[in-house]
Every structure is written in structure tokens, then in C-alpha cells.
Image 1 (tube, rainbow, N blue to C red):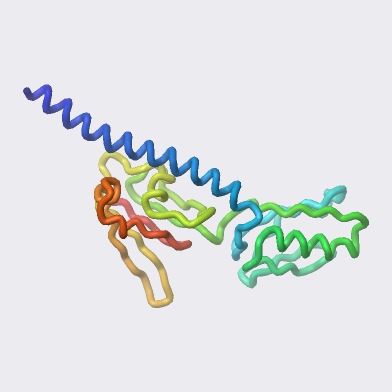
Image 2 (cartoon, rainbow, N blue to C red):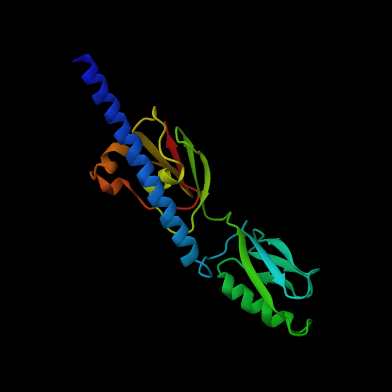
Length: 198
């Protein structure tokens, strides 16, 4: 009987690991699709890095950092407003302005580093760290992006959100949400949110 009990306990632990792996795989697939769908629609923010390529003008091709004032500098055309605009909008403006200086100018702008919209996951997850938000994601998806919970993680998780009035701490029960209960806890995350897995 003791052998049967041990196998049952082991199997229950495996179910949690399997469910975490399955959720992780779905999150990766959805995130990949979101990157493709969001091309040209992402709203740029301070700290983002874009790569600007000028056809046949390799000396002008470079990575540029969007400053806290929302601008970046580029040779010949000077200051470019980026914050609050899409990549396509920035590219169109640069194309028009560059045509005054470069014959048959062809410009391509691509997002290289997404630093303005990130969340952070710390504690007992497989891959703690910062993760860019390509789209709106919820707590369960974010945990999956971090590889899921480690075997000794506590189900009681905290979501910490910074605001002008201070920090707000929101509880999240992993087991409840995974079993379809109290789904209101599975909130949409905001840039800068930190998930603490104890």
C-alpha cells in the first residue's frame, strides 16, 4: 500500500509539472504570433531601441535609442519624435525628410529592443527576469513565459504594481486559477509590474 501511495503522490506532482509545461508552450506560441501581428503597430516608448537602415548609405545605418524626452537624433534630418508613435509612422516621416538630402532615399525602421513595456518575474520560477510585453498579457501567461513554477514554489503569488500613489500588492493563487476558480485574479498586467513567486 505504501508503494501505491508514493506513486499517487508522485503522479500528482507530475500533473502540476505537465500543466505548467503545456501552459508554457501555449504562451510561447501566442507570444510568437503576437510579435508578427504587432509589427508596425507597437507604440514606441522611452528606452526602446530602433534600427534605422538607409539603402545604399551604410554609413547612415545605425541603432538609435529613444531618449526620455521622446526623441532621437539622426544624421542629416536631426531630431525625430518617436514616443507615442508606431514604427510605420516614424519610418514615413524619416523617409520624407531624408529625401531632401539623399537621392532616392529608402529607409527601413525596425524595433530592436523593447525596453519601455516590460514586466518582471522574480522568485521560484524556472527563468526569472524581465520580459517584454508585445501585447496585453495576464499573470498566468507571464508565469508561463518564465518557464512556470519550480517544484517548491508557493501557490500564493504577489503582483506588485507601482503608481503615483505608491505600490499596490495584489494576491494571485496559482492553483485556483489553474483549476478555473477565482479567475478575476488573473489580471492584465501593466508595464513595470513585478510578479513575486515565493
